[in-house]
Image (cartoon, rainbow over all chains, first blue to last red; front, top):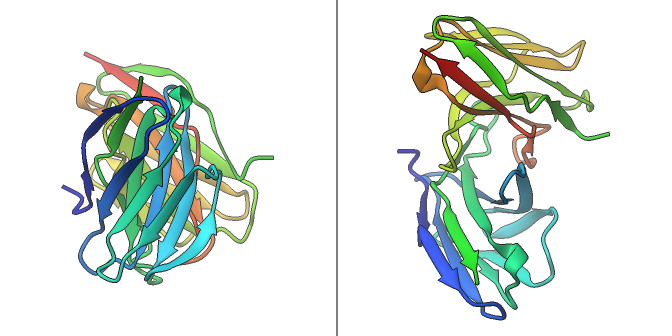
Amino acid sequence: DSGVTQTPKHLITATGQRVTLRCSPRSGDLSVYWYQQSLDQGLQFLIHYYNGEERAKGNILERFSAQQFPDLHSELNLSSLELGDSALYFCASSMGMIKNTEAFFGQGTRLTVV
Amino acid sequence: QKEVEQDPGPLSVPEGAIVSLNCTYSNSAFQYFMWYRQYSRKGPELLMYTYSSGNKEDGRFTAQVDKSSKYISLFIRDSQPSDSATYLCAIRGSTLGRLYFGRGTQLTVWP
């Protein structure tokens, strides 16, 4: 168990809908990263938050947004869903200190858009 | 040029073999290096982490970093069928920087 919790584990929804994915980082970790992994694709970086502030954006669509709350949990909001958004969504957390900069992943949320 | 290049394989070896997995990276500013193992669409599991050149050993796993060549490796000794998974290298340039991932190498260890 990495200590990173993602909910829900599975989500099935229709095109055009909106969903929210939740991530609770490991205790003490200030950074949260979101990644998308489609079938046969590598991990695509979406966005990074550190202590409540957005630090970096990757290939995140305008229909997607994220935030990190004061208690450090994070949510990824996906709206106007399309079939192509079906994927595994992972979050990872990291402490961000020089000797503790490795990142730990949650088990992911499997999103299926029908 | 991608930040991190990794041969996707697949790689198939017999049980007991030594496995060598490799990545190259483009930016000499990268200084933190990780290897992850991912089983069949589960979350990537951190195997090895290092922030310096040289070797780091943990049981049957050895991570090697050569910053002069921008080349990182993961060696698995006495490979087991349970090692069958996709192995991903990941690199970052700073403590708060994003992680850059290789595409992953799919490894199968057959009994």
